[in-house]
Length: 597
Image 1 (tube, rainbow, N blue to C red):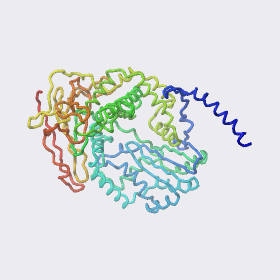
Image 2 (image 1 turned 90 degrees about the vertical axis):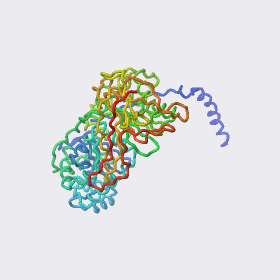
Image 3 (image 1 turned 120 degrees about the vertical axis):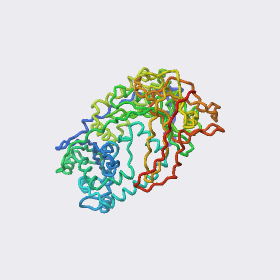
Image 4 (image 1 turned 135 degrees about the horizontal axis):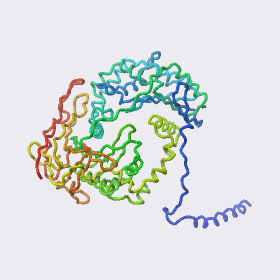
């Protein structure tokens, strides 16, 4: 009987199979999906306010018996006084590590461990945060200890001395990483070495910070007039607000910190090179850009996604990595701060002998996205990538709270996220061309005629990507090479300023810079796979690039010895200077002399 009752069910499944097969399309691209229906959360639903006016963003959930409280303060590197770079980060680190006025540092660690509380503190360029994650059942005790740490830090002298020693030891190693060097020097070239975006702590600046300085910075920044609170996890809203009222009671408010200052430095166009004995060059090519709230910010995001920011669907990855096999890592990035224009840059890493060819292809793709409308399918793929991944921004309660805290700090409009996808959908191919980096238009006053080549002091002409030469229009005096970052032991890599064109800013398109043309020419070496000349390029109108920076050895043609640009620098590692003393400069400035090619 059991077998007989099973037969009708089997027959039913068999009869349904042809119907299901008939509904399936023949090819995957023919599958149709219903439109994604998603509405972002409203900021007002998560925002509360304490009696003191402190904003609190809450997103309760009861899946796990854990609570996370984050205190967000405006105050980071931009508040570091002259000569004390690193003060903001040291204050944040010692807030956690230095104990409180009533609890020594080691005992504080033990108590947090006993309560299973994970406590952290840190500072960045603009903001500082302090957070605690603990079990719901330990919340009251852990929160009391946490607020004692935030409000009454001791900054124990032995812990501060240990932190100083750690930072100086890290400085001894930071010129070992070529990517770190490139990032550091790029920031200085883009924003100016005195702007907080480019400042880096040195041994003298760390030694100059006293415990009194830590207390003064703490009193100025870590206070309720400069605070937004975020809470997620297993709690009820009413009781949590009462806890926070008690925790912040009696805490003196000193007002909010100012917005970070805009850089006054204007990037000098040119090609800047750091020599380092590594098997591949690391390259940034770019210029200053726009602010986050610029009317063209969303078209610029889509443009960058198509050109180099979209991973394997982007043009730079397809050509430089997939088609030519010149780089594993290649792409572009659009940085849009709120208070001042940021930057756009393309980056890649390639073997020394193929750096010039890879750079040539990158510049060709920048030309192309400005000169030719992007295809309809390419544009649709890019826009859909923003639209269909949009819900990820709010995929967790922590993400929701972080987003809304940042929005409040930066004054983002209430309806920004509600209208974001519609503004992405409205981007056209003409918008992409309009906002693309101005790579192909001549700058004001450019003369398509006379060209000059940078030469070294011995009068030898140079070739970009080969021996440091750069073809330019209108040779002006090259800027002095900036001494690179001072390590604790005084070692510096060499920076060669390879080119400078001092014409008025070029204002075509969204991005602004000055005119510069780099001619990658003269190399005899062939691309190993395709037999193409490495570094060969046709002449084209000048490029308003602010900076092209590279690290790595200079690519050398087969059988040739490169002519050094300027004097030969002292080899990295020969000159050692004790910590705290003034290092002997290892920089040799390249003095170009006019010449005709």
